[in-house]
Length: 184
Image 1: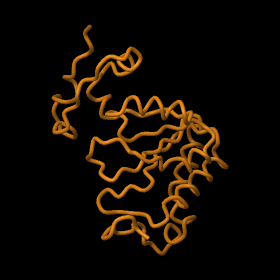
Image 2: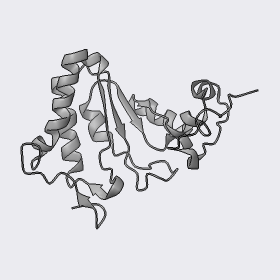
Image 3: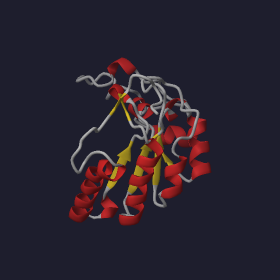
Image 4: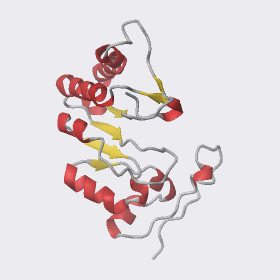
């Protein structure tokens, strides 16, 4: 059953790329196979958004689908550079940190480098806690845009610049190259 009424389930294909979980995962796995063959697994990574419903799309079998994908990667390409998962949130436009851990099933499957993201830009303490508890790397998107020196700010406990959401996805330097470095 879908988590939100009115969402459309994506991938209603009837060919070899639709229907079963194995078929729906086929394209992603074929891409990873091709890239690892061309440049090596240690230079290949993939990012997943299990449970995401952006633009009214959904998956009726989230954990089963993404667990299958993750297990196939673990079996066939255990030496990938990393897998990157985005924690599901009810509203991707929100600045709120995801309160539940929907990535646990995939962390249990994947034995290599694991990157988690979703809302950590406004929950730095939670990011460190999650990283330590789960032996995972944390991706900071929004705060990296606003803090060109983010690693140093995190390392030293310095305050972060607030990001300017209306400047996201524009074609201007404002909001991308005009954020200041920390000054003591």
